[in-house]
Length: 90
Image (cartoon, rainbow, N blue to C red):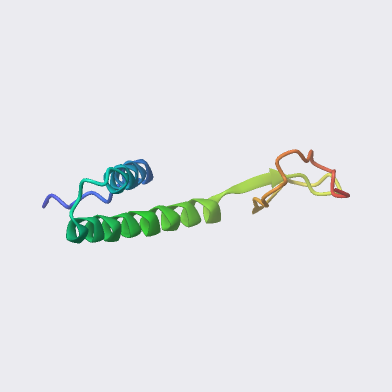
């Protein structure tokens, strides 16, 4: 079995993005290096956004049916955090 390269985790990508930002804020890089670091940062940002989008798509919450039936799975809607089951009038 060959060693396959590991895909960086969200946390690893975020740490790399933060390092790029620190480097760019440091003002010590020549222009060409700054442009290359900026490009790397954009790649990390896009990867983070994609990972977040994937995680958001997988999130679901269990809610009880209004008729007391079995719970059903539905996508998590932003802003639903404070709702209790049955509080559909908010």
